[in-house]
Figure 1: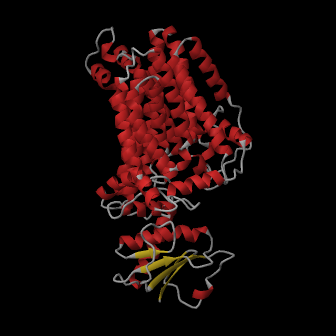
Figure 2: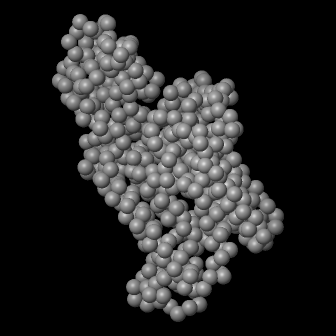
Figure 3: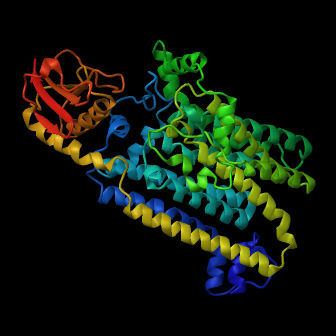
Length: 544
């Protein structure tokens, strides 16, 4: 038993000086990292399988339907940009669409394949985080990091970690980038290609993640420069050349599509993004930024207990921030690491502090209400902060503990990892996709509308004024997707829909309206019998 616990707590593993483990202990000792990573990643695999089996014919709604339409365009059109934003521009790049297209088409083009793709992308991020943690701090950091990620996964739930919505899908790659930044700061240049991929994915998927890529990268590069000047012999320049060349090649390939758009269109999307953020007027300030960030630093941090996840489209309530005990502990950990000349600990603490600073600044610059999706990066800030505190503290006390104490700590963390991962596994196997309650309505509407349309003729789908609120605008892409899946040539007068603009030859019109107190009906269609009605949603089919 002692030998097995050694396998959970000994960084050196098989290379340690104690007696070599035998039997089952030898298997655990040799494959410890793989076993721990597999336990943590299994919920993502099960969640993906559930999405392509039980929810294969699920009908997505609103932005998810738009993302599926964009994914369907891969291989049919030159997809150069990311998801549409309601501010009139698109997120910087199409990497999300290209990655989701692989599981989407492998699943036969089912909507469940889109959600499975999100779960698999995040599962791949967990594997990469485990590899980076093992590379940085051996088995002990691997185990602590996997437990942290598993706890965050439990807090988020499959509604977010198996969700192809772009604000949700950028979070786990951001964590990969942060772990990679720590490795780079410690002089591990081999992680540069991973930084290029993870950072590009996060920024292209949701531009709001950009500050949390730029800031830690700047800290990591500064640390790397300082390290190279003090330990030149240990880090010769030729070790940097190959990963740097790979990174340049990766960045060139991944950013070529948005650069092509910028070069061939006036104004291009990158210019539109720059103009928007340059002219945006913040509604919040530094005080609000500090208050919000404190929720990741209290005794019940949001990344661990999820207080900020309540109210999907409701504003985040940051009016009563907790005492930022985590910030105090982080500063104490930084001082402790510096006093012990634990420079790797100093660097992870500096990265965590830079993320806290980024959180304050990012919230202070918000030009709209503070919705949960705007701050979807927040769990990464909290996780990194508390992981830095725990890791620096553990490194300071582990050599003072008796072997039984170290073994007990390792067994406790490993046991918690198994328990939390089991809870995540159950959630992945039993939780339906977000907005699943709207799937039946969308399917019923299109089932009634489709027989009234001629597949040989193009059809325009619109929301005539008054639309009856934003609900009709959310229903529009869902109906467009379902009709397109049935073989209709669908056109839309809406900038959200790429490659589907009307061409003037359409003779069929599908009009979607949501009954609301200020929009009980559509005057120009009031005399026409609806083709379908489900709840408060009415659909008319007319000919020109």
